[in-house]
Image (cartoon, rainbow, N blue to C red):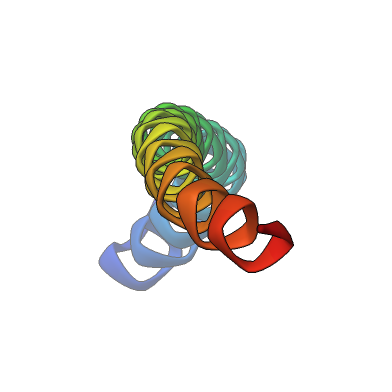
Length: 88
């Protein structure tokens, strides 16, 4: 039995769709994996940047605390002579 052109087209469509579906599924799975891995890398980078920023803020606050303590010490030294004079 010879196979006509119309029948070959139907056979090609059937076999094409049979092979195309697994290829499409594999492509979707690989794409999803790539997207998720990029997001995790991005979140790791942003976590590192956030940690660095928090450390910088902490160091700045430590410096600020030292300055405030110095100012408090200066103010207390100024008030001592005033209190001693008022006692006399």
